[in-house]
Image (tube, rainbow, N blue to C red; front, top):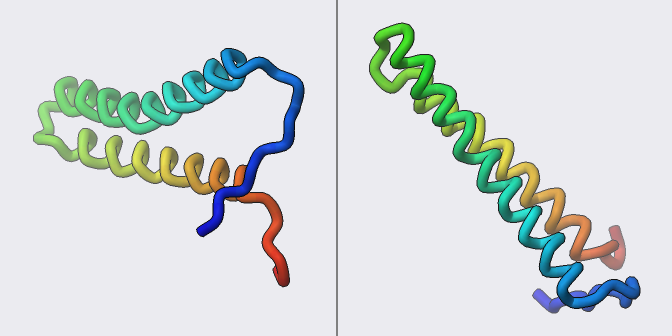
Length: 81
């Protein structure tokens, strides 16, 4: 797959790096926080990893969807589609 160069939007490389850093942190939190919340619920209800696994499944799904949106946005329009 060929890399599609991004158009020059006038931002400094540092600004672009900060944007990517924030994006990566957001996706990481989307993956981890639901699992931790599930762990907390398991502790309160006395269940064994039921909500923990559900939380990480939900978090992984959310993060995967976010990554797909980013990939679709960054790849640009495709020829013939």
